[in-house]
Image (cartoon, rainbow, N blue to C red):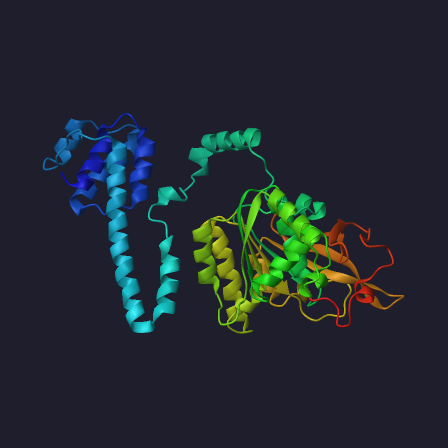
Length: 423
């Protein structure tokens, strides 16, 4: 018997699986039925929709005398898997042919991009999302909500800063967060600290990409935070063995693992590469430092393409993405969504937009090490939440609130070597 005939017969005869489940799985396959067999399938479905029961065999034989109605020898699940394999083989052949054609005509980079974008295209609707008819499925929806309410934690990946986490419930699957700041306003440091707060409790891999610096600089920031030593000492090779040991021990206590991919000489990456690495490592979180640098140009269409594709990657993979962005130049002490370059793209695509800026000591006319941090746009919870974070660059401590971890009168510019700190 043909595979489509066997699928129809399992829909009719196999009583070990509920009809609705059998129908959902078969339609989710998008299997290519023969035109005549498709009429049989449609008749069975329409009969059930009208009478809430399957047609009897005699009715089917009267309507379709040439069709072979017979209980199949294997159970329903067997033919579903057979149909999946058939689809996989067909899809792989088509994809291989398409990629080989691009490779011969356009070269390896476009071919690789096509490979990455098509590698995880869903073959079956049932593997991803099943359409929800709220009126018909409300009982199961409520039951599923009750199950989650009674057994699951609503909190996502918590950054460790309560004013952010309480307003958002943390980074949820498929979230796309953006942290925006002016240059030299510690956005990379904040990304590293948030990652370490999350990885301290969350197992799994964490991908950290940087378009602004090589991987050893990200590594140095992480180690100096863990070991609580001055990052300038790390750059000058002045970190002592005891401090390195402290960093290693703190790293070993963290249950998460960071995989760092930086902007190395002669090597670059794009969003297709990032997506391929997500599929390779299956991380719990992705951090992208300098997301705006992935745009081909400063044209708003190219920038919007980057934010839209980044949001699409988060949705496709289910992995939350945390990215840093560049703020417009502004003389204002408090930043808002209007100060973001290409704010419309970010407000449309990002789940949460956070801005931070260093607070200035107006008496000394110097910037302090305390940051104003504010949620200026959020799809979950309040869209305006403000807080303060102090960073002690002597001890590499981060403190939420007004407290200065290295002394109330201390400011970044007053203690660092000429030229300031590389942030």
